[in-house]
Length: 480
Image (cartoon, rainbow, N blue to C red):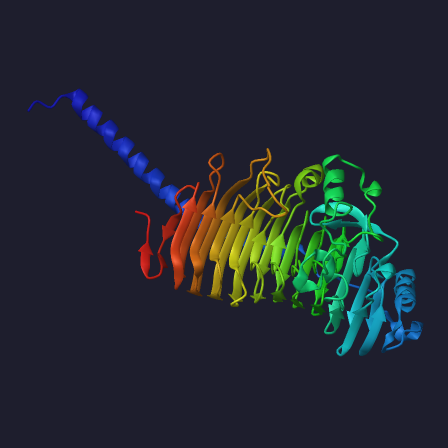
């Protein structure tokens, strides 16, 4: 065999190219490992960006402004006076002491910390007229003028609701809940309800036609329930330690807010649409050490419904959920279905999810009327005792209130689950329904172990799931 100079040169070139390729692969693998290692450091950065709120060392006890703790006297005026006095003094703490205090809606102002002492219970009026005049609020992802939320702050800065007491919305089968239209919540046949033509259909039409929010007037004569606590377009918000129960509708709803901390809160409310915490059009949100036992999603991250979401066009982003306990609910941590402006950068870690009435652990729901996107969702260190339907469900065909088909193709990508143990996985370990025109992309399961699921996987219109050290029903799933 004759060896020529040209053949030696060719061999050297091939060896060099092989070495470069090998080194490039090693670099990419190291970069991938670094990304996987460092991704939750970004969650830590988000948490650090949310400053600890400070308030002047001044206190304003509502009893000093005429409040009576008999559970019957309406203390709206006394609480309003205490908040006004606190505001005029430059801020401080408005104290609700031990006892039962009946009130209408509470409107917070900048630099006010509304504090419930141990044994305090705030009972909200059952009379819908007490929640008038209407205010700028929202209903299922669409803005409108409606009944005031029970606790409301509009365009305020540095506000807090703290303490160890209870806010009792007093909603039930005789007030607020029947308006949802379900018999089990007290609705009577032929009684008015939210799906009547003068309610939700009218709001949907107004939103699609870009009717100014100031002209979308509902309230009295309509059956759209108020939110429980809604900071609207606020910055630097703290909700800490308190308990919410018997909510008319969604419970904690920061909308168009920046720098929000929800910590040590208990939501124990099983009414219709009683979502626990729904950040919407909001960013830099930390939900920590909370307990959710709800009639709907425990946490649902949202960004507007249909045309209204596209009009506002503010994605919800940079949201960290950790150390929480999810019990009853339609989902543990959910994105959607009001999601038209998109959701990105969601971090979930160190949570427990367990209940025979918990439908899913992680859920993403949208359709071609909602559109929107969900990207960069990282879930780590989750203990799941029991779910009914699926550990992970991604559904791009979500439907409610009839057909939900339109011209806005949703995009879902970069969904990562790691270090998750599931004792009873429900009907499906993983359930994904993408669309032929929009495959779900880049779903990874690393160190995920699911037991007792009726079906391991049901996956349609999705890129292949990337598995690493994952088992479902004892079967090993591993990409080679």
